[in-house]
Every structure is written in C-alpha cells, then in structure tokens.
Image (tube, rainbow, N blue to C red; front, side, top):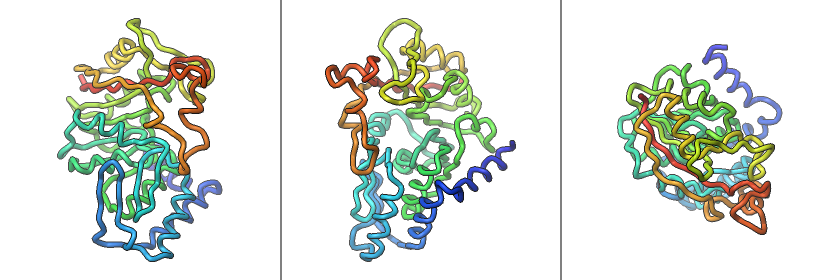
Length: 303
C-alpha cells in the first residue's frame, strides 16, 4: 500500500463506529473561533483565559475534554480548565531541553501522543514540525488543543515504520518512550536512521536495566502491567543497538527512575497508574518482580 493510500485509510477511520463519538464531539468545538488569545507554552500548555469564553462555550470545552479521556500527556490549561494528565510531561521535556536546538530544522516526533512535546518545541522555531502517531484518540486531542493554538504542526497518523516512505527527510527526530514497545528495536532504530538527513540527530528515551553486560530483559508477559513491552536493555546493549542501526557520537544524557511525581492517576487518566504497577512491599520492583521502571536518555548522530 502506498503512503498516500495509507494516510487516506487512517483518515477514514475517524468515521468508524468506535471513534465517531469522539469525532462528533470535537466537531462542535471546532465551531468556536477565538482570536488574539493568550498562549503560554510553559510547563502547563496554557490557552486563553476564563473570560474569553461564554458559559455555553466553557461547557462545550469541558464535555469535549471529558469525552477524550484518557489524557496521558500534558498538562494543559484551556481557558481555565486544567487537564491534569497522567504524565507530568513537563518533567521529561525540561530534562531534555538543554540538549537540542531546533531552530530552522525539519523535526519529527515519533509517538507524539497528543502533541504536548511538539507544542513546547514551537519556542525553538523549527522550519517544520511533524508528529507521527497512529492513535485516533491522541490525534483528536491534538486537534482539540491546536484549534486554539493554530500552529503549523502536522500530525500524521503513521508509525515509525513509515518514516522511510515519507516525502522528505528530517534533521532531528525525537522518539520518547517508544522503543520498548517495538518487537524489533534494532530495526526500529534503522528506520530512524533512514528517516534522517545526512548528519541528522536523534534523541530517544527508553526503559533500561542496570548492568555492564550487553544484555536485555525480555519480560515473560507484562512489565509493570504493560503488555507490549518487548526488550529492556542495559546501556551497553542499547549502545550496541544504536551502532548496528548506523548511529555514531552516542551520548548518554541522563538516567532517571520514574516517580509518582511524574506518573500518577488523575481524574483525567486511567484508574491505575505507577503506584498500582509497583510491588506494594518493595517499590524497587514491579508487581511482576522485575526492576522498577528506569529510563535512559540518549542522543546520537547518523553515521
């Protein structure tokens, strides 16, 4: 299937029965037009002020935000409505912020979710900013927010495997919290390399386990109650994957332990979150007995 045909099919899926209630709700919000509203792209991506909307418009915003639950990435503040997402994504963004400059670059965010990171990236004034994510729900969340921000961000309902088919290459690619969801991590990293311009860069993060051996944990069924976690490498193993995929100048930026400050259940998310995924008697382990979630942040260049 050609890329244009695939994109058309993924657009049509918005009319499918299970997605249509979300889509119909969003279409009502798209009728609200506001000019010259205040936009702040800080820890809370904030749009407008309470007095900018009528009571009926406030109710429509509230009902649409509720219809689009769960909000995994954020937080957002829409005209005074605070959408407190499961992940405090500002913590991750502020951690990686010192390690890139996107001005005048063509940038991709793979697994972009609802676009929180891309909205924050606008401050760098990239030449072009494109998000890849096949989820209809997160795309509708993005459209909900971007209707008022009115950015030029392009949201593609595509995955990392479509990068090499895309109609142009990228100078910088982010892939945050995706690699462990892929059954072929080296193949995924090769897809990133094929999507880059010469000397292009990537910045990724992934789960890791401690150790000096070049090995990876392969969870039997679930990891931290997540079913689609395939490989969790040591840092030496991750470096090997990157080398095999065609990357050089590999730089380990940070390692972090996921805390309940960063990931927790809220009224806008799932009924369970990190506190439910860890051993209640030993927070250094998941409920399955594996090492608790720890992340490594890496930057590398295309060879």
